[in-house]
Image (cartoon, rainbow, N blue to C red; front, side, top):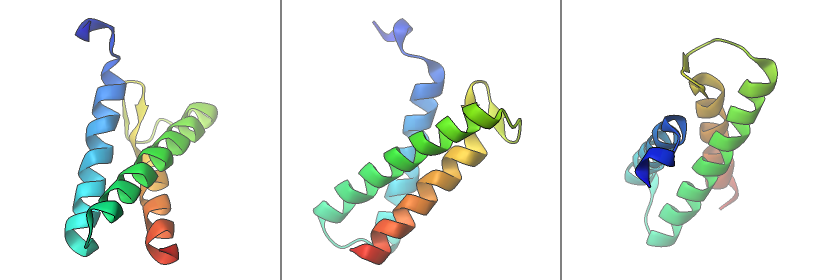
Length: 85
């Protein structure tokens, strides 16, 4: 079962959880904020990864994971979530 999970998905998930945990430890107050931050990090990471796949920019790429674009997307959406809520 575990052999069918792509390594890029596992690494991307770990980055999303780490980013959301950092933001929540820095400025979070409730459990609801943690879930919103985690959701925004995941969505932003996915959008950034899609942009990286479309542009094929080799900047900070780990295997199939476009780390620069995905991280920028995650941080951008987490920042928007903090500003709006």
